[in-house]
Image 1: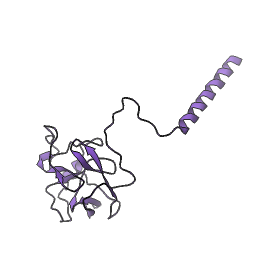
Image 2: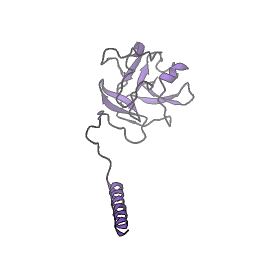
Image 3: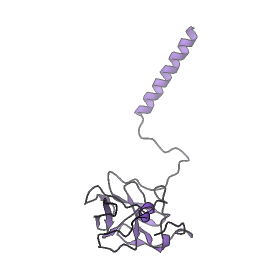
Length: 174
């Protein structure tokens, strides 16, 4: 019986030591083989930031997701042309205030009341959107869809380069 208690006590001490070491460790380091997208995580609670992508430096939301323009939107109109089913594929970039915080974006940034009733971020007086087909930071799969959806550059320009043949053919529409 004594041997069983010693083993149980030893296991408990080792488990406690490992738990304490893990709790005191610094931030987790990337393990070998983990994919690195090269995307910088925006700091704090910014609505927009910039990141490097296959298209060069682009505008991303606070989660690092690519931001797009819809060419059917009229700059300065204060309205979004993306309504109904369009919003399911192209959700607006929302803001917590009328003066959203940005990091690295040199274009004029503001807001409008989006078609969903919430504050929608604008870049150079144009509403901006995310693409439901982008699954992780760095994705630019909405680039050039139907020749009306374009990634936004930090200076507010449309990036119209399509990096890979076939992008824009996925039926993301509108």
